Image (cartoon, rainbow, N blue to C red; front, top):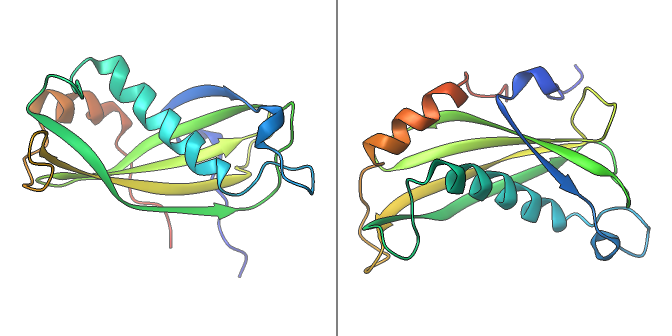
Length: 149
């Protein structure tokens, strides 16, 4: 049975990310490790846009505890990518973000994965803290059912 490849319609929020010459590897496609930077850009950009988590002043911050990327097709410089974001689950202290990366004019993801944040005390960086209510409310429009296996 063919594996499900996410489509643009599966995501709720998009960030545009231009590839850079330096993103390519010796095979002239975007290097696999660079996709994690695109994931981070999409999540951090959304969070920054909410104004809720301030890494310098708020009592709570988020740290990545797990990330995964599946590659379906290559991307190349000078592609301008659409990075889709959705939220699959919000726990007491954690959030599972799911990300899809799309080349211009393509409906299926060239790469997709997830990113799990755990919220912690900013000063101690070890004691978990609840997801702030304001952030939880900001994430509701991004909620979807978890991705198929």
